[in-house]
Length: 169
Image 1 (cartoon, rainbow, N blue to C red):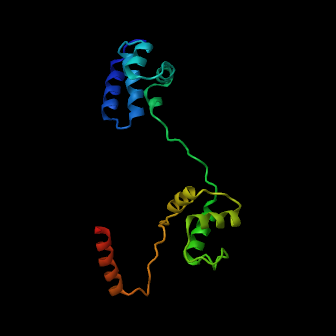
Image 2: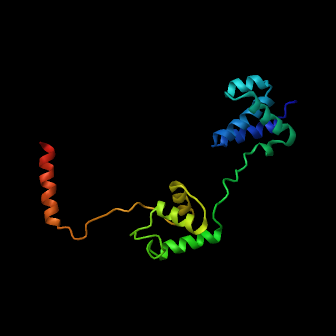
Image 3: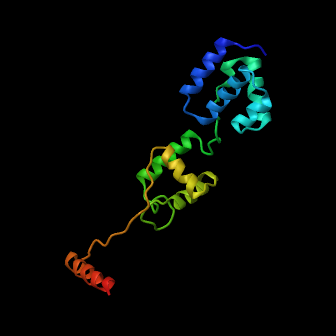
């Protein structure tokens, strides 16, 4: 392939300004190809498989520099519809687990919400997946912490002092 100075200049600029490592590697592979390196040499220089280098070069030859840009992957399809997510958010924020028919629990937890979703929508979620869903629908998840409401502050301080003495011994 003949040396295309305009594309070389454009690839140099794109490569220098690129922050994503994979995208920079693609630009560099094609740039080295245009500078006259063989595909085998490019593979060794960039520590990439020759098939990968061939793929990048083929994309450039067929469609130009515009086809070298990495396209955003669509990701995993949502399990609940938008309406179901909205309904779930409303339910969690307006009712306690007991009011929602999930048993006598004081707080919503990720595993408890997993059970609710499975019961209501017949969709299974892992605990981590549920925390991701909660974040996506704008709810923050925190693990509950328990404090003694009727604790005597003076006795607590006395215990802390005794405990410090015990730790020293």
